[in-house]
Image (cartoon, rainbow, N blue to C red; front, side):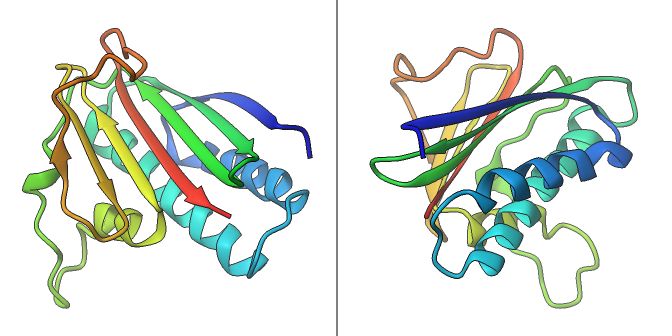
Length: 162
């Protein structure tokens, strides 16, 4: 494996194209050395599908838009990084999202993402930045100088250690 392998994908913000993203994740990770390969790949695909569904349903809320995604298979340490940018006008504070009850039929997206990924960074278009680690609390980040400026975009970075 090269030190870093990247794929850039620009998708319409609609559910029917999310299979392209899942297939890209599958193909990239098929070339990596991964423990519990099938479980890990499925977990990443599910987390990314949930993140993109949130963008489609909430950030764009039915409006036309696009999702720019970068998939990176990185070494030293081995990890898979998913970065997405969107120009949706609706943002949120992830620390205000309650854990779903067993009776909830919706609202499990962020819960699943937090369970499945090792690191999450969310940078809203209002320049507020939150970070969390698996099952950890959301923390607002004051110094954002090391993060890529989204320039009017919402930015989400998901990391899974392989």
